[in-house]
Length: 357
View 1 (cartoon, one colour):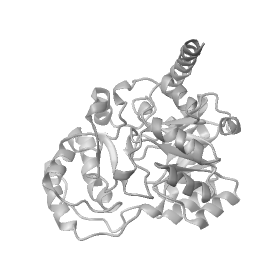
View 2 (view 1 turned 30 degrees about the horizontal axis):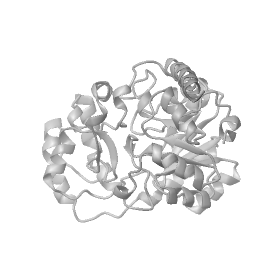
View 3 (view 1 turned 45 degrees about the vertical axis):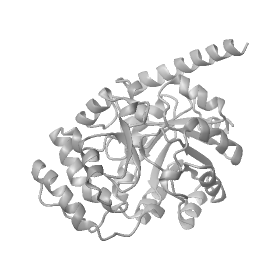
């Protein structure tokens, strides 16, 4: 299953995970592509205008292929009646950070149709997506332009649904992965399948290329994923401490001190299950017993606090998204990291070959 790598000229089978909220910069995207991988631009939180600007910025920095990532609108749920309770929970944090009282925004997320318009206008070669299936009209429109589509699955059934919907590749996200779970066919608690268990099952279930995601931080993990049948590996946490990443200083510091046993799954920040380093906000939210607002409302409600906390260097109030292998994080440049991954792959393969022989 090397068609994907050949099609886009990947000399290193690494896809940059699209990391929204700051880390995904045009510089990071271009650096991964220039180093022989596939950069991915996180666009789900961006307006149509910002998407066009960011894609143009990437193109100024690289002539190589890259991907743009969107969230499926399938994930957007109606507001429940818990607004006042959540507002009261957030109030002391707003006061601590010098913010006005919590106020639910009327527009919790960017307009998906406008985002698709912008992506189609800019015409990147690849579009990836997560949180569900794309609307059929969006799929048809992108495919008509020759766009290569990659959808995210956390179970075999989700992978099958994506293939039936017309994707060209499936990103199989294991439970070790940092940030939001891509689950859409079952409750997220029922889709916590580890990467090593998930990849071969998805590879056997679909005919399209499979990209492994979750818990891979070095060349050994890449070789292991390829041995399981993956065509490439999507890596996010591994790039968060690269110099080109837009990771805030306080987030970066927390990651470099983090360990895999400190990560937890939570809905506290966004209303969707996501993996990150446990901290004050998560622990107090859990102790409160409150019901979270559905995504994207909880995400929009906590956004002012998270932005202010980053500026105030209060890691306890940030969504410190990270995968379970965060303890292997390296602080370096993207180019150097990609070189190290390539060398580690060679050494891992040679060691494996010797053991087999």
